[in-house]
Image (tube, rainbow, N blue to C red; front, side, top):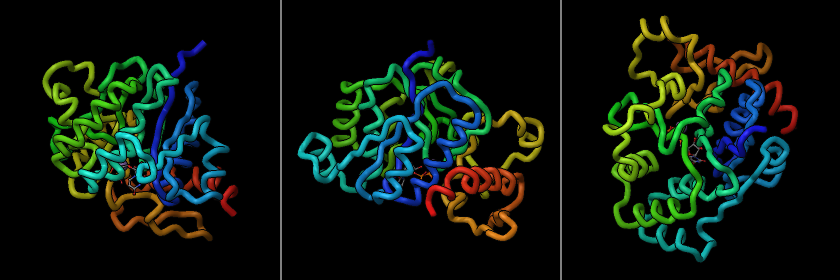
Length: 261
Ligand code: UDP
Ligand code: MN
């Protein structure tokens, strides 16, 4: 039997929930043997929560502002870290042996169950500053102890970018220079940006892509979609992005949209 592992994502509102639902269906489509878990907050509406519960094996509601625990206390000092703190809750899924966190704006193109053989903290380099890892995809070991340390770290040290990526790169700072086995291939987190590209590499290695990450304004649910032709038209276009956005919309139309109407 398979180990007790899970993919984990996060949605604090209905638009990111659409991303999480398509992500979940992409994982099922590639035939993962592992569980699907999600963190949501009360910002997700009841009908959307129902859709999420139908697809994910475990749904954990985190209410940062109402809780009287250490999370709340830490957040009081660092209000700018709201969503970041919510993401840190992924360490509390201690009912699993190992997890892979995926941003809700990622899409899995090929089975990557082998990621669970990696150790905490494994991640792929961020193209904006490759000595930092991108925190949209990472392998970790759930632990209340680590969660507590992360909160304390966030409270006392903050984050150099005001978000989870700066914080996690400070906490797991040995990632950059210690153990190359914790450096995931870029194919596990192909950060899609319109501001740079290495087109010959894309041509050479594009078919190896396993997970695509639609950062910033390339969010699939923000693109215009023609309901007649069922085609997406991206403002950014070019270099294969259109095809990947279309894959996202195909999954959305097939698996998510029917449940919403
Ligand atoms: N997120 C969320 N609600 C928000 C912003 C972010 O649920 O209002 C979650 C979601 O899982 C998202 C992740 O936090 O994928 C990181 O944010 P985002 O992907 O927008 O950052 P980027 O990858 O563009 O830097
Ligand atoms: Mn993201």
